Amino acid sequence: MFGTYDPKKVIVSFGGVEIGGFGEDSIIKVSPMGDGISSVVGCSGDVVRTISPDNRHEVTLTLLQSSASNDYLSAIYQRDKRVGDGVLPLLIKDLSGRMTFFDSAAWVTKQPEVNRGNTANPNEWVLNTAGNGELFVGGHD
Image (cartoon, one colour):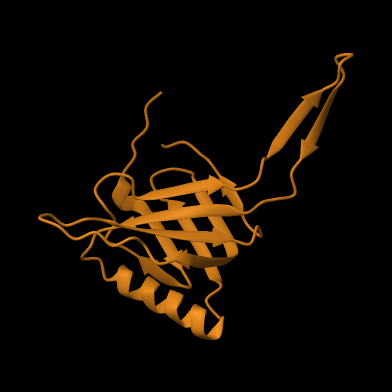
């Protein structure tokens, strides 16, 4: 089996605007917030599964300090704090494979921690979703 991954072919769109200028290592992280499918076993060995209704996700976008997408995410966050209209659709797609994530309602949870020093440092933006979407973890061609 042979596949090719190209990080330049991973697209992120938030509110219809493409996010770019990702960091050098971990650029996008999608983490389920719910438990998925869990199980417990009783003292007689009976097993019961529980399917969590929590389909929310936490998405971390790591951007270069120089990325213009920092300006966009800052503006969305600040407006959301003032007006409350920063809930936007979020799409992540790996065009070199079959991984996709979409949720119709996502928002920036807070501004990133800012670190300035002798070298450029990344900014980690954390977004949460309302649980309206779906994550498909696929391989590469």
